[in-house]
Image (cartoon, rainbow, N blue to C red; front, side, top):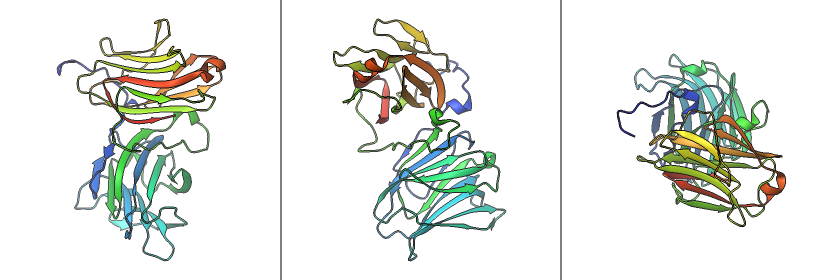
Length: 314
């Protein structure tokens, strides 16, 4: 694609900010598109052995003087007898009434995965997969455009995602899948074994970054005979996304084309009775039919194409 070629207009909610790996703290970055209800920020890292405190600030700007307002200040403290978290809001240079949350599961010397889930009136925070706190906004969420991380913390990855559309309208937390397990990138082609096939409720998560000069991208689910009953293929020539049957028949998916060079993406596949539901970057895009017996006989998830892979979960 030439530099002069026009890109199709895409709603902001379809565009995901690329993750940051091993950023140096203090770390300050712009939140592309700002915050809105349904957006998630994931923080993966380690608390140093001699840590006293660190903080994650969702800020209204990034200037040094005057200090920007902070809509949500998340501040774990380890130097007291009972470690805890302080939450607060900074407005006009003045801190508001702080809220203390005891019983934090963050520990010195231990890894962690923190998920910030932004809703209409409050932010919910889970630590290592368990709900920990909620904090009601005192400033409009729409003002937040900057993330700041400061203090005694080793950050492995920061991710910006949309809420899992398959749990929309339900109260439980969406599952937060880490970006990093062993290395920042996985080898492509990437193959993962499905020992028991797929079953209702199982979610496949694939996150990655399109290369500078992409040629193709394919995600397929294969059975024992390498037959591929389910294939999703992105065509860079005509900018289409399609389900492809094992006989080569295409069924176009009506959605903005997201696989542009250097653009981050997240593919979600939810297994349900009768087939698979698809979502891209947190937007539900329909389903394909497949009977339960065929789903249980799937044995391989295979990903090929012009992408860097950061995360494959199932």
